[in-house]
Amino acid sequence: MNLIDSIPVHHHGVDRAVNLYTGDLASIPAHEAVDVLVVSAFPNDYLPTRTSLIGALHRVGVSVEDLARDKEVDLRSFSSCWLSRPIETPGMHFRRILCFEPAHRGSAPEVVGDIFRSIVPFATGTPPVRQIAMPLVASGDQGEPAEAMLESLVDAAAHWLAGGLTLDTIKVVLRESDATPALRATFARAKERHASAVSVPDAAVERDTSGRRGEAASRFDVFVSYCHKDKAAADQLVAALKAHRPSVRIFLDRLELRTGAAWQQHIFESLDASRKVVCLFSPDYVSSKVCNEEFNIALMRHRDVESGVLLPMYLRTAGLPGYMRMLQYEDVREGDSIKILASAEKLASML
Image (tube, rainbow, N blue to C red):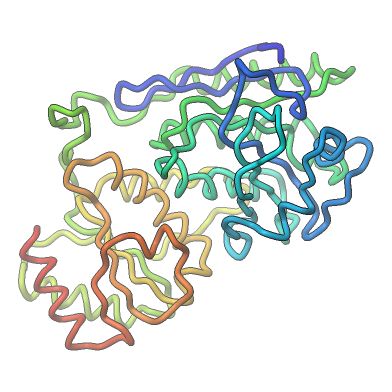
């Protein structure tokens, strides 16, 4: 692969990058090895066509169709992606495949952020995901304009890295063609836009001796992340918190996704301004893109802050993804008022 250009991204003193290459993703060299290779597909359609990355992988012995039959994690219900089990084909310099197959064919900026939402739970897993590579997803057989797709990918990648996504490098790889000069110019314009982008200043962040962040000065004590269908339980929790701590500062809102926005900056800023994030897990929470956006951004902070950030409450029985089940939560099923009040008292004592 040939490195063309790079956008440096800084987050709390850590240097990361979005890199642009030309090359063949089906033959990644050892020195450019990645943990996850992203491919795109129509829903449940993994036909190895002549011009697609799925087709190129099939020709070197990696069948996306076979991997799809035994997925490691399926996140398509809310973030358009599934993650494969480890790749066993010899000579491949990627560990897994993340398949991007949105059921909703919205505009590129509207759907591309799902790739990064899907990566969040695995970025600090075991083993951690540190490097990912991807083509111009959805710009081949799926027909999205290549320049619009590149601009959306780069904007989303840079914003997620600046927001705390713990990847070292995101590699966007072009197939050499007559369109390459125009795509290089698109990347260069994106680089200019992001040159002055800065995350929370290091001076505002406390760290322990291991380098993990402590809690920075916050405008809110608690951010309550909930689905509108669970508003009654959220209101009960807030009222109980205020009864125990009248001075508590609570952020309670139902933030909406803005059509066409690859990165929900307003959600990140609100979450970053809160000491703790309480998530009310329920079937509607799990299926809500907005709630998952809030949870994943909070999860990035939770793993980066010494004392943790997330304080989940299991409100109603749901098929929780593994990375939600792994967190310690308060069990208040099925919306048990007495348990909600007890959990509110416990939370108030921690603030």
